[in-house]
Image 1 (cartoon, rainbow, N blue to C red):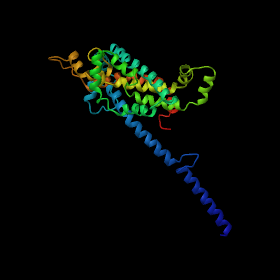
Image 2: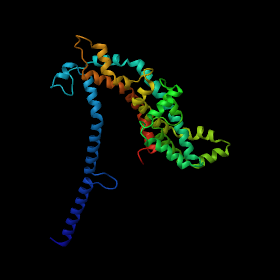
Image 3: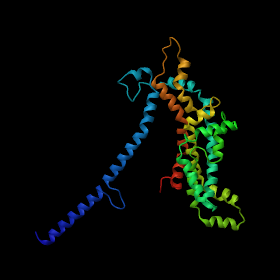
Image 4: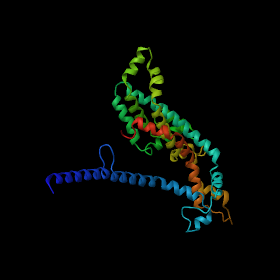
Length: 318
């Protein structure tokens, strides 16, 4: 074997090794097989952690009592048992409770989003004394646990006569002190801070004032931030049971509050002396699924705008 042949074989072996290396590890333009396996495995693991409770809840909500007691029936019930849902709807008093839930969540979320946009725009586009200090105080309100200010707020709202009405949610939202308002102010601050100064200068040359610039230029461009803030705010107001129970008392109720009383109400409706109609896991899972179903529907409807908004507003840290 001459030297030329050895060089050709060595070159072929190097080329083959490079192709295998690119296939397994990847290159700058393409991810390798090993990296893809790791990424997809991680995504499947994370997806399983989040989806398992929903799948468990969905499957068990359709099980009849025989399926629940049968150890051979795990994930696939012998049939779809809709009676669990009909009883859960009656126990939750679904439609009246749903309207009350939307009333005490949509309105505060909308007001909180609008106020956070105004405050965020002010911090992002204007200079005024103690601006950094005030902005730091706004962020501190996100760090302080709400339990710390619960009693003072309760006393304050009681003195104002706001307990037992939606005003106890609306007043803090109106003054940018709603549930996690600081994070929404930060979202709008980051968004408005990236707006080019040339837009404002051009509008000012056309005779537009600050209010008109905010309403006609800044706010329409902040639609992604508004969608994100409204959806997050809606979910947080929806899931808030501690403050809702304290502030509303027996005047208003929500689906999560009714879910907390689900077992007691069920026993009152279907129990009683001599009754063998006890609540089971299938009925409880049906009640839980009904409670979160409106949020799931809203998310699936707004999913495209929500994902685009997260990407454009930089919430992911990009």
